[in-house]
Image 1: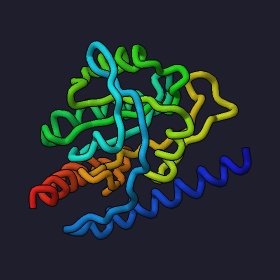
Image 2 (image 1 turned 180 degrees about the vertical axis):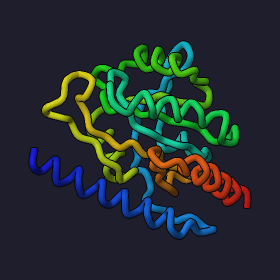
Image 3 (image 1 turned 90 degrees about the vertical axis):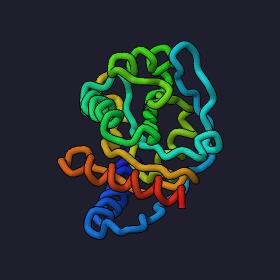
Length: 201
């Protein structure tokens, strides 16, 4: 438990520092914070599922977040804000929500959850992977935090980041966005447009 707390705190400080640098400088060319490791997940479609990997996400600019469907804390707010992004960001920016509770969040559960928030599954993907790949993706790729909450009930079983992350067409994380800040949508849209322009040049 102590080790998990230390790791969680360290990653939170790292991500916060990255956010502060990003917010303060906001450079014309965005930094590449890290590249996502290879992973294989199952993503939800309207009637079925399909395989999702780093390779088949190549060529797409996307925004990612992490939730679990039984969450009684920040997840409903995150999902509502993600839903709002579909009308705020360019249509060619995709949205990806990963569950941190793959044992309970089956494809059917994720599909119903997405429908609750009006998801267009062709643009907003809900994905699950095994815990080993999930933790590697969160820690090494997104440099965010996630941990089981030993004192939490079903609605608070996990502690996880409430930030959004922007991923470019080559699988690099290009920005972190604190959803508690009113400015996050403005920065996210500006950066998404920059990343799209990079890919076209």
